[in-house]
Length: 468
Image (cartoon, rainbow, N blue to C red; front, top):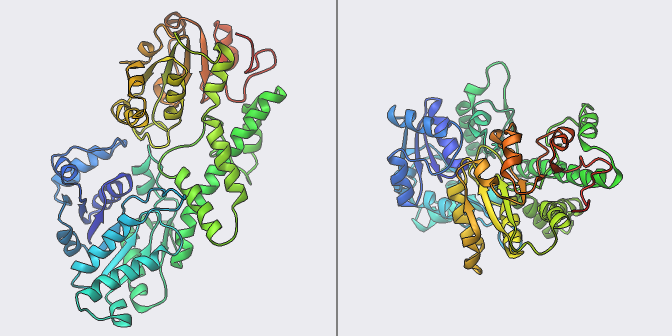
């Protein structure tokens, strides 16, 4: 098929590349001309394992191209994917301005039947608004209105369920493909087109789950809210485990063995971040408020998560005191999760600002997010730019730890899982390790002379609030 994808962020670029890999002719459109030019040169603006290689191979094969020409994009694809950003507005709702810009552009340029697919995460009912925007643009051109216009296109909800760091594999080996459409002839036609598009995934087991459009939109939010809830639940349980003298690791294994629960997303840490969970939880709360149904559970999930981002700073202060002037603190990991350079809502951003404002110098290392971190820290500290000089970007993990009064582990990159502990002990000025991801066995670290603080694994005698 000829496919057009509007937006070349995480969702749009992965969607376009993977659909091209299946043999489709894909044109990815973005209004950022500089970004398009970079992609045409083979420069991928985001880090995602395997993405750059697939961009290169499919572009050379002629199945993938990039353009800033919206009219060209509308003309190219019988299926038009909208995969632009839907950031949180100040009230927590999803900002749909970019979605509507694309919808109006499609209506302004289309000349034949189009299947318009909402791939962006949009609130329940957004498909109706997109339909209205396309119809309005058609009407401005003097095209038929009402039922006649509705026969010229259909809007389908097809939310993404990609995990950053494994997005290519998630797309190519999906556990489900949600497609939402109605029962008008145009929508039934669009549903058949999407089923054919995703037919390569149906071998042995049909992954496509069809439902009405509003339910499909809601499914995306409900899924992310459930995962965020599991994370906040485990983080709260980990804090309680520390208070009660229990070890959260065997507790996690014990409850995860129950098939009704499972072990996914049951790992305590320093809170969730990224582009999805925070804004989707906020958007669901906003939708609930609009419907007169306050989302009490999700409000608690968000509160727990914000508090968890402060955990390492709180425990560092317990060890070293509130004034960190003259102290050097090392951070391993800056991205919100491993295998990505995404710094959106990352715990490290909260942590670095807190440490700098307390007077500390900070030495940081991340395998891929250093460039993005510089941009984000400059943005976060635009009101206090002088503090930026107190951030040192190390070349490797031991370089970050060199001379530090404490090491804080923020992101669970593989490179941090088996360090040379003897060399690490020698590099640190003080053998204090605050592990926000529970990478190591507490007994092992403490036997080597480390003051090792975990999330929920601080056994009696070495409690998180112990003396300096």
